Length: 323
Image (tube, rainbow, N blue to C red; front, side):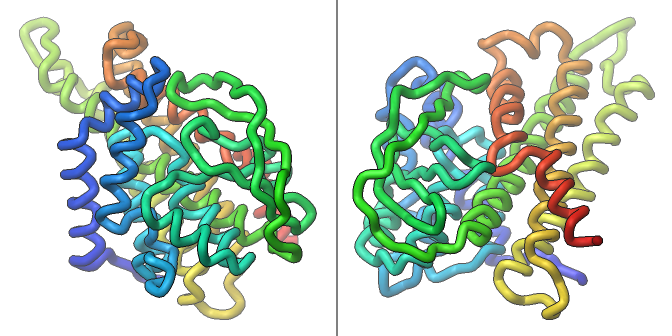
């Protein structure tokens, strides 16, 4: 399968890049970690104004009527800027669940810019960032609104998770696999963005940092470190795009969408983790400090690696499709 982004996709990514930069996504991330949610919520309202939160929502419900391809382009761009909040849930998992449940009013609210989160099965047993989002729960095919318990800290200071108590039942017979696929794929795209940002930070540092009268980026070992990351990211990206095509139904009937999504999640997780490790090797101790932006990307990568299915769970899923 051959797939290249067109000008509309490139323009979508550039628009999000510009908004996230102007709105101070990194500052919003730090503010949320300190307990101030307003900058993050303001950023999400701005994203809604561009139609980003409604990409998977039909026009008639206030959305953009786009598909999974546009969603992964947006999720990757949000990852590049470490945008705080429930990205995969708001962009993908919750719209999928509400669409399957026929909840048009809730879809319209989501498109207007209210972040949403969901606890869904064993792969996502707790809801992320419930303190700034509308909360849902999906268990045994039953979709409900929910109330979140006391939030629990994660390795990412800006991210919390919480157990969810179902409140009002919205629908039955809601397919878990489709919701999991959308959540996992959005997370994979977000990890690609995080990995790309860490590669850029490491490359910039390697050009500026001097040792023995030369930029450390001129040393072959450093070049190889960064090249390994670039290769891993570029190998993972087609898998993410291919999985998006599978969810959009733009592939042959014999293509297993579950396998495509799991392969994308594994590859993107591994690539982002490699970017984090190599970024720390290049930057050294400064990369660990809270003041340096790399630390934001490192901790978010760690948190998202196990979100919407651990790498081990996705590898097992791939294995089962091949037997």
